[in-house]
Length: 113
Image 1 (cartoon, rainbow, N blue to C red):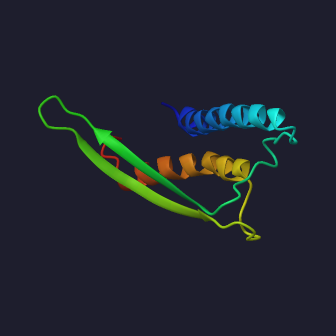
Image 2 (image 1 turned 45 degrees about the horizontal axis):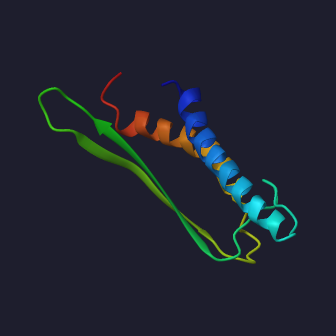
């Protein structure tokens, strides 16, 4: 996969999952005669912990698979904290995260040049 493909594959997958969840939530809200949520204003109403782990699996014909953890990132969403974002704000960060992890892997862990 190219850099572009890695970066947007992760983002697109999470964005699509969020869109599906938002559609389901809005169906329920519609039935309850509540205002629909949008990508831009949907947020958690409770504290949330987000954990992102980046791993690479090395495969060989003669050796067992080896899993290398490149990064573990923990993000805390605190309700009513000015530094907390909407859900889409966290999802948007995945674009730069994927790019950083690919660079980190290439610089520190890749033995294939």
